[in-house]
Length: 321
Ligand code: PEP
Ligand code: MG
Image (cartoon, rainbow, N blue to C red; front, side):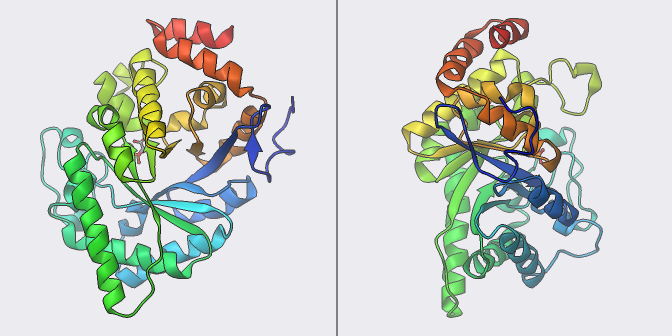
């Protein structure tokens, strides 16, 4: 086993028995691109487009968004860049977007719900910017929709993407194929993973929100911090069924919540069948090392037992033996 990340940092990694796992970076602002490259990210697994909308008075234009995505695609010429469409609401407020004052904002108009509702014009602009960048940029773009709860929402988002592609073609510009995916952040999405996966190329599990909603424990409230832990078997079962259902539909499955960047959980996640792990750049070398130290066949047996455990402490006992 390697004892430092240096040896594996630049290479793509696989388990000792040859299962490849993509290790990618989460990007929440432009300054994070360089560290992601330096720490050996295979690509970007979550590009949070919210930051393009922050610290300004009006939304960014189509061209501004095009430039930002184009730069990211050019930074990872051999990689994949998963861009999440605008995900505001809940904890994420943008003053000029006229967000409602909601009693339960985390259960309110968030993510795709806004893109299919009050922000549908912004959604269309963003999708055109993304498709144009995909045609011109070096790396492979993938588009991902946040906070999806129903198949109907996904179908509407896919329709919006088709419309954006048609708009671009009408202007005689090129449209290239891009991968499309859905974030699994709501219990409903985890239960519907098969039907969602049948319509797209990939799913990406957002464990920050998924844990919050499966455990009914606010991700920001320390008083319930013990419950907001993705290693509770209730959350592991949601992850397990998501991966299994998606693989049956030949979709790949990533994870881009904080859980993906915890090297102590890498063996569990590889064993659960995750194809990609995306995290803040700082933990990439450690996670790459952990993947290359893992034997998939053993990890898979352990993960099966872990998700069947009755308690979180039983989960950890299973992982330690
Ligand atoms: C998540 O919910 O796990 C996620 C990656 O999205 P965010 O943290 O931006 O809500
Ligand atoms: Mg989220």
